[in-house]
Length: 85
Image (cartoon, rainbow, N blue to C red; front, side, top):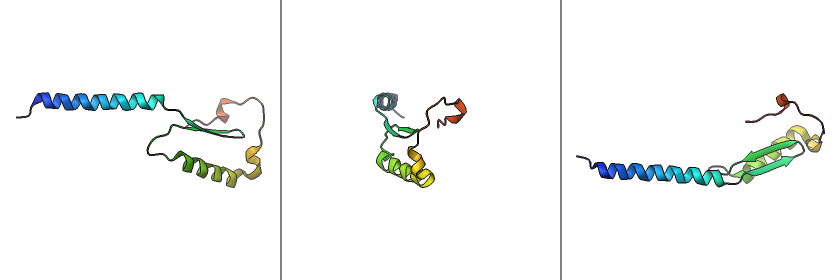
């Protein structure tokens, strides 16, 4: 027979752990990469190496756009021109 008190205790511990992780994630800062009109924000986690990700992203942007990467055009931006993941 399983002790329901120990099951309740385990469930309470899991719930508290989940709440603490949620609270911690809500207080974390984001890392921002902004180059010309390119903008990317990353919420750091233990699974994401933000420095490596930003370096890879920058390399891909330079390969694709070269010197045009730093060109900035000022003017209205239509909603379809924005890409939010």
